[in-house]
Image (cartoon, rainbow, N blue to C red; front, top):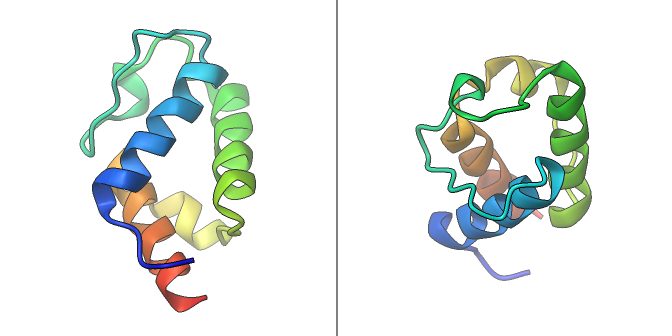
Length: 85
C-alpha cells in the first residue's frame, strides 16, 4: 500500500466511526476524544479499535493503545504502520 496521507486515513477512520457509533452525522477530527462522541464507552472503544485494525490491516500494541489521547494519535500510528509495511 502506498503512503497514505493523514487526511485520507482520518476520512476512512471517520467512516468507521459512523458505522460503529451508528451516527451518519459524526465528524471526527485529529483532536477528537472519547468525551466528544456520544456512546464512546469502553465496549465501543474496543469495537472501534478492532475495526480500525481490520480495515487498515494493522495491529496496535497495548502500549500504543494506552498512549492514544485522541483520534489523531491513532491516525498517526496507522500512518506509521502503513509506511513501515
